[in-house]
Image (cartoon, rainbow, N blue to C red; front, top):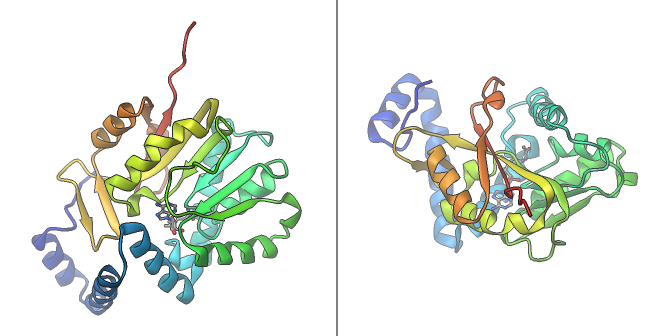
Length: 257
Ligand SMILES: C[S@@+](CC[C@H](N)C(=O)[O-])C[C@H]1O[C@@H](n2cnc3c(N)ncnc32)[C@H](O)[C@@H]1O
């Protein structure tokens, strides 16, 4: 696979020449993002503003799906993957950046009542998530849908979740946001539990585009996980799926007495 530096001037010029019809939408996005950067404080506030603007237009596109069919397919891919890795109805699942429940509604339907916990920095996308819940008639499963300011998980019970899942969240996160998550996720994992997350992988220099899309080397993230006492495994079987991000699984090391 070829890894591009999308932040480089050469890439931008080449991309513009190949896709001239996208220049005006890129310019609009650049102008909007510049305004949000000037008028918000930290990254989370900035990205919350991005999500508010995107969700107002179309919640399914706001979580990265160009069509309803793609929204369904991307959710099913996440769901099938976790089931093939042993997710059981009695497990307790925390979804970080649950968006409008693209995968979440399937997890909610499958898991025992009350065992799904979705968190997101964007209240607007959580309102859209409530619409999805209603559409799928899943009110009786009593899922938790909670807005958060950050990822310290201090309001959640310790050692509680068998699976923590974050899809297309770290692809929109600077390293300090990922670090906050990795520093704290171990405390909410149940014994034997794991945390799966996707990320935009590069083998070249790490870079970001418009502060919306971030590209990391695998070693950066595995080293960060290790710093917080977590083991990290690159999920090779995820690479076979039709998705451009890669996946890491982190867990607490098994202790022998
Ligand atoms: C591309 S969407 C993916 C949503 C969902 N995971 C899915 O696959 O449909 C990214 C989501 O992560 C949320 N998000 C971004 N940064 C976050 C953070 N630091 N903590 C929690 N949620 C975050 C966004 O608000 C958005 O809903």
